[in-house]
Image 1 (cartoon, one colour):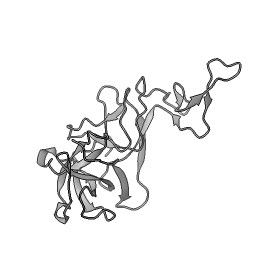
Image 2: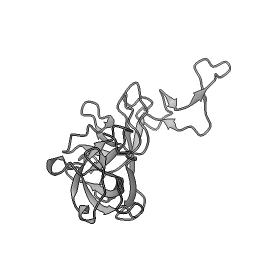
Image 3: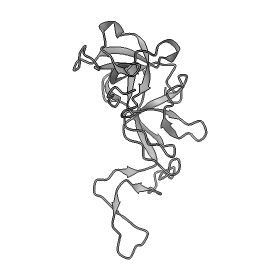
Image 4: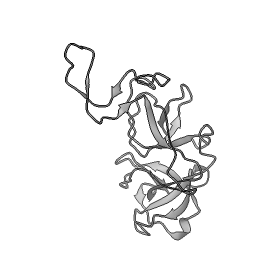
Length: 204
């Protein structure tokens, strides 16, 4: 069901300072949007969209960008601080005189290095997402603060929301506050941290 969810974003660090962002190689064929919970593929270590059900040692972060739909896991990353290989850049155009294998790169285009950026989900990192209840918008209450809920993907736009209907063994996050901008309204955003048991131990 659809509730018009928004991308999960990072709003603060309880320790002060900017959020911690990391970049790991991206799993092949990923098309998730920015603000998606991510996990590490067991086979090759590539980062992919969270499956929504793994809740032990699972989530490695929340993506800061859309996935790049790579043909090969980590395509473009050569494993060291050498010139990039493979894809090279997101936007190219035209041809280069006398260089049939070269392309023009749009000025300011983001380099594709085969990796995807994500906010680290440690206990000091506070995220924000829309509040819902089993596919419908929900109005948060002050009594929701401190409670643990799960996450569900919105079928309408592929963003994730905090789902009040998922509790107990289905919980992935703990509510820390109501978003002060939205307040106690239908479909408001709420602030949360990921439960320690859900966070991938490689990250934590």
